[in-house]
Every structure is written in structure tokens, then in C-alpha cells.
Image (cartoon, rainbow, N blue to C red; front, side, top):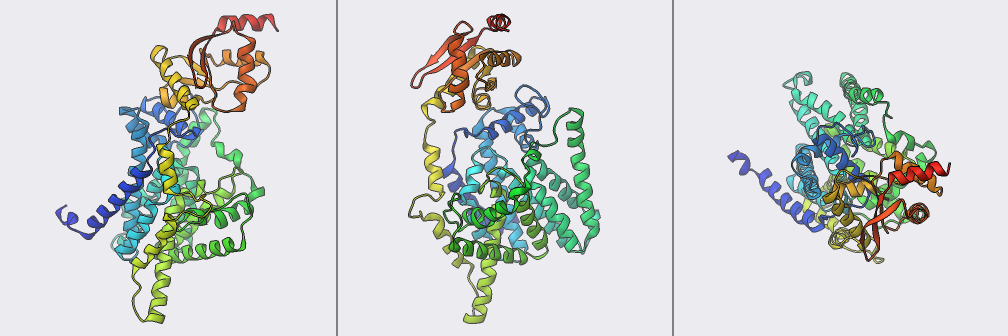
Length: 507
């Protein structure tokens, strides 16, 4: 231990931790993100922490999201319901993943200064930091992938002394490849990376081991879903081959240049110009050249990238840079390694000298600079967003949920954003049916055993089109029990008996 504390790696680690602490605290947003996905993860983790299995807020088994990230959240969820704590856990995943990436670059034969620069760049990448502070699965998936690549290097270094089949770390590698898929479905690309990578390395038995490990690892999840009569994955309905090539082009020409350091502002609504095409192709070539110089890791990295682009391109939902976030640290590594090797070649040929890695500090200049139009996604943007309070309508919405939790914690609330209400107050909730027939609305609330209805002004048109007319038409069924002003937010008690009587009378 004493030897490690005095080693160079420890000092580099301290430096990276300092950068991580500054960047993560600078952009850290203690507020819950208003997208629903992070709330569903929280609900799933809560169910696991309670011992109710992988289920939603009502204890109903679900396959809405892969179970890996909620499983990682569950231990912390057992001791606290703090969302901030879960976000800090994401920061831990990010830093551990970066340290593993640092070691991976050094093990590939590169200087620690180059590894430090590449990892520092990862730690100031806005898109990755954005999702890390959201209570989303990107950071934990990145950490898992970093550990997989690190273990692969460890195995190949020991292979001359011992067969891989006798190495416990090889079986850990296979288990983590499967677990990465359980964290994020798109991480199936890592399976493709090692499966095809081993084939190119002529390690056919290892390719077979990857297939076998995935089959064995996925079988329990498949059987569980089959026995419960659930769909295997919600993502299968989003597969669309018609946009395969256009999405792949968007990822390579727009999303990758925007995400990878140095990145440029990109307007996804406009077709890519010639300059962006040239930049994107050059960037991709540098990344691939960097991968090529990563020794035996080159093939898994290359096919992981191909698999990632292929998987994302199958989705029929707009993604922009979002789904590329988990791969961004490895692309950044490719950029730094590729430029360093090109610099070495040029310096040796034309200057007859060595290429200093610190020249690559110039890559950080575009990160700090703001573009002329002010539309580049920067750390400053994330910092400003973290300091902004919730809009009044959301504050009222959350306050109403917390108020109700003190008086009737077991009630079921009907609202526009039930997942947000659950994550912030613990109140279980359902969405109202979107129908202009108030009878259908009432029956839906009865079927879902609604106790209260929360009328908010979050800005969603369905509230005014469907819910408001129902409330106005049946003042005897919905009684105001709480109200907050600026803007007006109402909590209504739902009279089930009167609702049933009205439905019977109006059949």
C-alpha cells in the first residue's frame, strides 16, 4: 500500500481526482431532472431495495428499462431516498471509469502524460457530465465498459504464463460483458466487439465463450419475462431499418464531432456542410488510428464502435448525441492516442525530435471557447442550468405531492407526470386517459383506483384538452382539498361512489 501511495500512478490519480472534483461540483445539479426516465430508474431501484423484485411503483413486474442500473442504485436506496446521493454515486462511477481508462492507456504502452490528458478531456466533456448528474445509466455503463477493456488487457498480459481458462478474471470479464447489457441495452455492442474481435484475432473458442456467456446470462431474464407474460424489451418496437443509413450518417457526421473533444456546434435541423463532412471524416480516421495503436485491444474497440453506431441506427427515435454518450470517453481516448501517434511520426520525420504529449493541451481550447452564436453545449451552460430553480408550476406540483404524502401517503394520485411525483414525494400515481369522453376518463380513474386528481400547469396541452373539461363537467365528483397559487394548482378528492353512480345513470 505504501509503495502504491508513492508511485507515479497515485500522483496522477490525485491530479485526475482534483479535475473531477472541480468539474463535477461545477456542473452538479441537485434538482431531479424533468425527464421521466430517471424517475423510472428510481422507482425500479426502490422496488428492489424493498425486496419486491424488479417492479414499478405499484409493485407490478416490469421490463420498461434494463435492471442493471436500478440494481446498482438499490443498495444506496436501502439507506436513503436522496436523489442527490444517487447522483453522487454516478460521479463515483464516472471517476472509477476514468481511472480504469487511464490505466488502460498506460498499459497499451503510452506515457502517463498522454493518458492524463485524454482522461482530463473525458472529465470536462459536457455531454457525459450532463447525463452523469441526471441519475441516468450512462456513467455506470461507461464504468462497466472501462473495467471490461481493463480486464481484457490484464488477461492478455498474463496469457503467456497461464491459460485464459484458468484465470478467474476471464470469467469476470464474460460476466461483465453480460452485465453491461443489463445496464444499457445498447451495450450489446460490447458483445459484438469481443465476439467479432476474437474472430479477427483467430481466438475462435473465446468468441464461442462470449456467445455462451451471453446466452447463459440472458436466459434468467428471458425466462422471468416469459413466465410473467411480459415483453422482452420495449426497444424492439423502436427498431426501424428504413432510417438506418441516415441515422448512421447523423451519428458520424454530426453527433460524433459535437460530442468528442474538441467538439463543434452542430445544427441537427440543417444538412451537414462540406466543412463538417471533412472534419467528421478526419476525426473518425484519427479515432480509428488511435484504436489501431491500442495493441490487442484494437479489434474489440473497433467493433464496439461499429456495433454502437449500428445499434443506435436501428432506433426510429431522434437521438442526436444522446445514445453516443457512453462511447464518448473511448472515442476521446482514440482522438488523443491517434493525434499523439501522428505527431510522433511527423516529429521524427521532419523535426528529428520527440513529440511532447503536452502539445495536445491545445485540444482543450475549443472546449472552453464559446461559438459566435452562443449555441455550443458547454460546461458553463450546465453550471447555469444547475443554479436555476424549478419553474413555479413545477415547484407547486412537487409541493402538492409532498403535502399529500404527510396526510395520505398510501393514496393514488392521477396527474400528468406521476413518475416525477413519485420520485420527489413517494406518492404513487397514474396518468389519466386521454379522451374527450368524460365517461371514459371517469372509468379509467375507477379502474386505476384513483383517490386524488392533481391539476397542474406544467404546460402540457393534454391537461387542458382532456383533464380540465372532465373536472369542470363533474364538480360534484371532484372536490378541491388543497390549492396553491402562482400558478393555480389544485388537488381534488375523487369521489368514487358518485363517479360510479354517474356512469350507471349515463350508460
